[in-house]
Length: 149
Image (cartoon, rainbow, N blue to C red):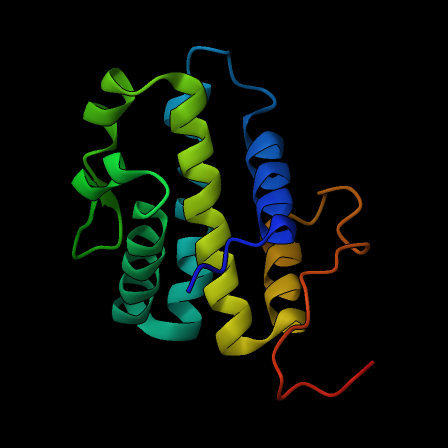
């Protein structure tokens, strides 16, 4: 089941745009997966290194349905992604960026499923405290175990 809802894609696009706004146009495709890397310490604190690897691996597997070229990317033991540099040279920059958006959207969607919308948004705010307009996000129904607002 895909968790890359339009809301998750929008949040992912905003995070990647925010992270790459000071980068040159040539480096944006290779930097677009950096957002997952920036989340790693926070997620590893919550889930452990193995938990982070499992979440990222699952996000990649879910994104493979939409972007089959992601099948060549693997999550290493330390949680980093292997194979991105080779793909960056082979895949069109726009397609590469869209693939990174979907991977991040899947990862965030999995987080919402496991810990709920409120905790996911809190973590995003901790990692990107200066990200504008993060309080207006509605990531969907959130975790069914969360209390209604």
